Image 1: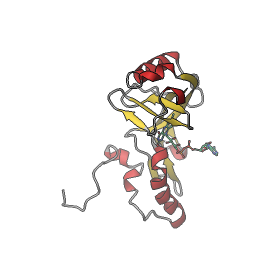
Image 2: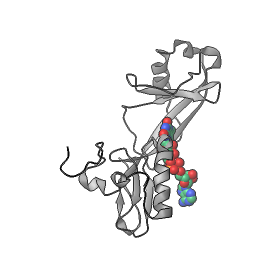
Image 3: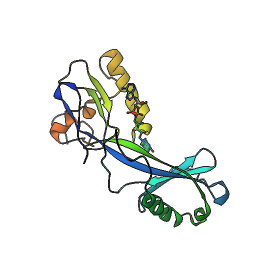
Image 4: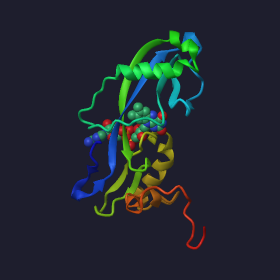
Length: 187
Ligand SMILES: Cc1cc2nc3c(=O)[nH]c(=O)nc-3n(C[C@H](O)[C@H](O)[C@H](O)COP(=O)(O)OP(=O)(O)OC[C@H]3O[C@@H](n4cnc5c(N)ncnc54)[C@H](O)[C@@H]3O)c2cc1C
């Protein structure tokens, strides 16, 4: 497992980094690309259109995570990954066995202990506002978290939604709560 990162003044930020892999195939002539982003939970795979004629494939949940050092990780996709991922895709998409493999890539997830981002002020460091640790799903939630974070910076406090549940101090309580905040005494 990789280390937890620290920001200055010794505040520990429980974000680790995982290595992710993906491949891209030319699928226009073999029945694809699919029109939708698709996650197959049973096979733990996802795929989506990459430009207009290609399909991007990768592993979804659940899988074994590779915790790595971001400054020195292996940027080459493993051939075992390519073999495994293509096998998983060929069952639902048999015509894709003829798809031309055109590219592969690796990337990094910044993963917190509960797989939700840290957003808000860091108690121990005056003036420090953090927005990181999106744990592999920061693209889709960027607009909704970006707005209250901008309010926190510009207006001094987020007012469009309550961002308390994203604060770093939640880890002292054990992590992110999925339940909505309710007044004291209510269940
Ligand atoms: C393979 C892969 C697949 C993904 N798939 C999805 C998906 O399907 N859906 C989804 O919602 N999310 C997905 N994500 C996650 C999403 O891309 C990230 O959560 C999101 O990009 C995080 O945004 P960010 O602004 O926190 O960080 P980043 O997008 O990493 O932005 C940080 C920026 O800061 C810059 N920077 C770094 N250091 C410095 C410095 N010292 N000075 C100035 N600039 C600096 C960097 O160059 C970068 O531009 C995926 C990520 C990966 C790796």
